[in-house]
Image 1 (cartoon, rainbow, N blue to C red):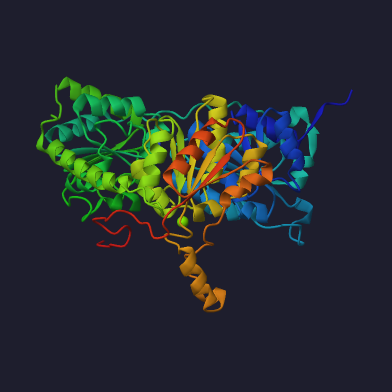
Image 2 (image 1 turned 90 degrees about the horizontal axis):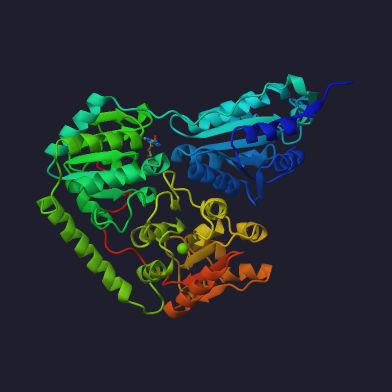
Length: 570
Ligand code: ADP
Ligand code: MG
């Protein structure tokens, strides 16, 4: 009797299952169509997307949410190249992702094969691991490597390359080197003397601040961090995706006094956030020049970056934070709410809330950002996942749309990537479907941001995902034009010479995209319409909704103390 044979497609699909991978997002074509079917056969969820970039965003969001990489499956050449925006985004966000690319058959390489290009080499700058298994029997070893490297240490991206001939090749089942599931990443424990140093430094601080980043969310350190700030009455400031590690509604959260907190803190406990552009590099004028940093990171190379830390700790945030809490408790130390620092922060929080509350009350048409977000915030479930992108839409939304739970905020992230929203929302909705049924995904998009991947609305209908997309429409990028000005400018000359590069069509009815799928969208120009649309959309359980809210094309942020990104005092 001849020995049982197995092909590369099946070996790969089964190896992914063996490594605990559950979700694949992709676009198929030669040479990966059979692979996508083998994946479903092996029990993986396969989500066919409309653009490889969006598929890659979805795969990395599921990786962030589940801590196992999602797969982005693409065809050779252009298919892979279209994922590079996504791969760079995941690598820079430190999120696990596994990209699998079909590639030109090896017997066509070097002679002008179909979509031939040096894929392993091209992917390498965006990856921790980029390889082509040399033969079918070794596929499981490479899959294990790819999953391990994407999740161990600082999470990131792996790329695996599969020439068509490797996928189709049949080998004796006995030649397949099966590899056991790679265990959960080990937890890095802090050096105990550094925990003591961190505790001593905090206890001598006059103006301490805890900054919580998306590394703390990824670490699942929410209960440890909440216990710490509550036990010792510490003010806490989340980064955009650190929101929800401590409930935004919590009295310890000082987001409303962000500038003051950063500028005047004398000691900062930095938990899973980098001192990059998002935190103004940790330097003056946004930070006190003498601020003492206690930095905790899973990645030792990150320690001391931009500003030398007073105490630099290579550790998992959950483990470290629990030990720090124990140390502080043993000294019976706590910051008092009557402390002048808390007084200063409370005053600033109140002042800022007053400024915002004036803007919220203005319901005149055309609407402003603050009023729109305030009413959205009032209606959406407090435990929903909020996906948010667009320049002003994301920046202003950050302070008004609040998060109760960790990993419930997905936005343009460290790389500032626009176009991530719909892909992220698809991943988030699948995660809700499988792990938190009934939980809502609200995707708040600028009109420009929505345009990057608007066709993923079809994907959402196909997979019955009840995502509520709210487009905050100002007819453009940053700012647009009102209809009258737009028309008169364009009548005056050649459209490509006179249309402002920041302008998009005025009053575009993006909500009508749902009509392609026999579903009515919502066009809103005032608050009652918005509220009505949102109420209806939140009830829908088996398909997406689009709410297109027109706002003043000139609407802007409230006056800022510092110009974002433009001041450079380095
Ligand atoms: P944010 O955008 O919220 O400021 P960053 O992405 O800049 O966050 O930083 C997150 C940091 O968290 C990264 O430096 C990453 O290495 C680190 N990190 C990720 N997981 C853990 C963990 N389990 N423990 C400690 N640090 C972590
Ligand atoms: Mg816009």
